[in-house]
Image (cartoon, rainbow, N blue to C red; front, side, top):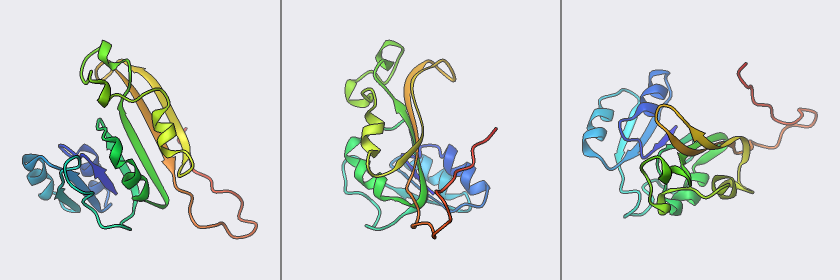
Length: 166
C-alpha cells in the first residue's frame, strides 16, 4: 500500500502490522526515521510539492491512502498509482473548515464535490462523505473510497462485489 504524506505513519504502521508491504512518502526526517524502524515499511523522503513525483511511472499499489493532505497537482499520479482491483482512500479538509480552525487557507480546502470530480471517469466511487465532523476535533471534511475496476470478469462471473461491514 502507498501512504502519501505519511507523517507519523498511523496508516503505514497499521497495514505493516498486518503483514502488508508499505511505501510511505513524507518529507519529515524525524517521522521517516521512525517509520524506517518498522518491518515492512519502505519510508521514502519525498518533497511532494517541490519535486517530481517520487515513484517510477507504472508503480501501482493495492491501496493508496491520503489523509489531511491536499496538493491537487498530485491527483493524476495518485490515481495512476491505484492498481487494477485496488482502492483509493482519501480524506482531507473541505470548505467550511475556516469557520472552526486550521487549515483555513482556501487553497487547502476542497470545494463541494471536488474529490468526486477528481476521480470521475477513472475510479468507481463506493463511498463518499462531505460535511462536518465533531471528533476527534471539529472539522469540515470530504472522504472518498474509490476502486479501480480489475480485469474484465470472465463470462458469467457477474459484476465485481465489495464486501461491506455490518
